[in-house]
Amino acid sequence: MDVTRKPEPRDQEEETVHRALEGFYSDGKPPWDTGVTPPELVALTEGPRRLPPGRVLELGCGTGTNAVHLARHGWDVTAVDLIDRAVERAREKAAEEGVAVRLLHGDATRLDELDAPGPFDLFFDLSCFCGIPLHRRDAYAAGLTRRAAPGARLLMFGYGPEPLANPTTEIKSWAAGVTADELRARFTGWELLDVTPGTNSVPTFWFTLGREVQP
Ligand SMILES: C[S@@+](CC[C@H](N)C(=O)[O-])C[C@H]1O[C@@H](n2cnc3c(N)ncnc32)[C@H](O)[C@@H]1O
Image 1 (cartoon, rainbow, N blue to C red):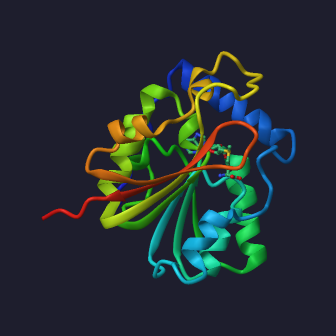
Image 2 (cartoon, helix red, strand yellow):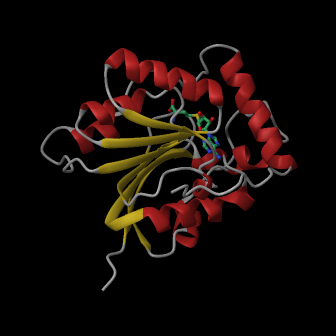
Image 3 (cartoon, rainbow, N blue to C red):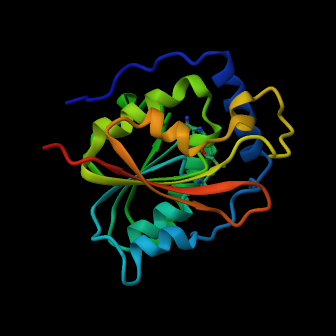
């Protein structure tokens, strides 16, 4: 059965973001592509406080470093990115590493157009949500909420508002970043469990949200 919906057209702001992101990938390796899995994710896959592997959905997976990491640690991984070159590279990386990852080219704010029904135990977002146009962010939150298993977690890294030396100033959402208050407001039915500042030279945060278990 085809569970996906017809693509909904993107508006002007989304087109601008799309073009800017394509530019980063067409220039070779984008600046954020370190190839290193952050310790905040490693803490969930290894060590004393690791989670039991289940289903995970990564939003904005880029070239797949962390999707591959999760698959290597026994997770059933679905990973989405808006930019086809990123997804192609992620597919190559997964093949090189010999792990199975379901890689989807598409929009994290339009998950109904993709074959990613869930339910998922974990969502991982390393700097995707904070770059999404503000008017699409509720759709992102709703898409995750519909796919969340009871008690699911969302681990998100995001840039805070402003000080990013943002060369593409017309992209308002990139300057807006993300805040704890925004996540509390947009993710209804979730609890913000933790906010830990990142170690970057500009304000960044690791947010952990938990989906409330329905009575
Ligand atoms: C700052 S990059 C980080 C990439 C990757 N998480 C990493 O750390 O290497 C943000 C990623 O989110 C993707 N992205 C942005 N908006 C998206 C959307 N609406 N749906 C899916 N992916 C999106 C971009 O294409 C890009 O790969």
